[in-house]
Length: 541
Image (cartoon, rainbow, N blue to C red; front, side, top):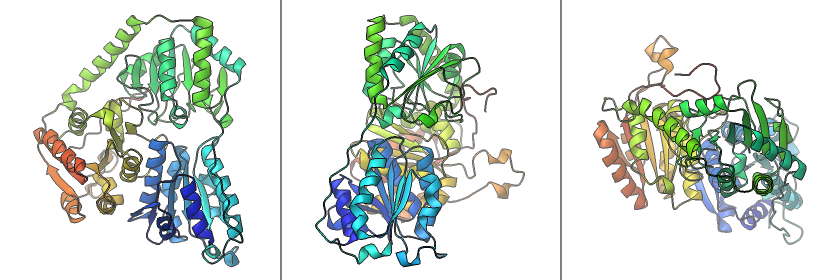
């Protein structure tokens, strides 16, 4: 068994279901030999995004591979995004010969140290079990993030000197300090108007049920980051939604305590901006580097969200017993959400042409079964519009992003999501600007027979950039993406009329149910109008 064969066998032993790659990657043939599925993409960044989407939905490491030098160079944006959003993916690029180490040849390890949790080269076949064991330990423990192992050229020719011995790696996670838990619960119960703020730590710990139990026990309003949408169902009477819109502004304004659960309190427009004077309790935080980073916290509980929430539940019962259901609070939340919705209903149900993008999203949301779907989006207007009004009813019903991403991320993420949960309808909303980045990979779900749906929002420009540029040539783009999708083998439709959105979505769903890939190109207006972010001093419209 050579070194690459050993890597493939270890991936199988670790329960990896597939490897996303591009054609010149070093391991696809060996992975196929041991029964792993290969998802071959048109470009490396999409392979990284597929691994990312799979990891986000399954909460298991995703794996991708690409050739060395140019292939791993072209993957940087995807890996950097996974680093920013704390996503555990294993990146396996090819590498140069170890005899060339220290030359001017491109070495991935040196370039990727800043955007990975750990980056190293496997320089000898004898070290494959050791290095892979360390990689999966770092992927499954502590603060999540990408890990890169460069597969040097000699691994193809060198054999293991003895039979492969390898045991799959378990994840180890800490619980919170009992005294810290006691103090946190005491502060929550003493607050007059607490607001529970949920981050992606809940998803990473698979603690959605514990979160729901805790919230219903303490009877307090809940808001989430963009990445954590769905960790607490947004149709629950105690949910005020994610960090955008009038309801979250209102409840943040009246809160005297922000009780974080699995949230880093990063100061970013996809996360909460905490106004001055608010008391902050930060719990279920796995990484001490997230404490006191952006805001001084009054108290903290470090630990895995699932374990800490279990402790919090027990401590609330100990200190307070049963808490009566707060009917008045639930009505206050419902009224705030209904008022916000009615303020935007003119655009959510607009009959204007070109089609208002909010009309597209509203009609899709009310046509599909959200309990059996996963949606995602790309950067820019699709992100701001979809996240604002898509009511996420189940965990992983929505994939957002928390810090920064590149145009085109949503297509690969939706492919990965479909692989993670094949029983759900996976949909990505993508703008025409993003199609220019990854459009050729619309052929990937056709060739690999991954049922899913892409909804293109074609407004003929980089949406909103006409506000910044005086000359049309700086922001206008053109293209008939229906023909492009048809040419790549997808079922494709172009929709010009608002009343045709729902029928087209239903036809697309039938194609997906039959095992196909549907692309719906919606001819939309440029409409850069969005609800404001909670905590920002001025509204962003």
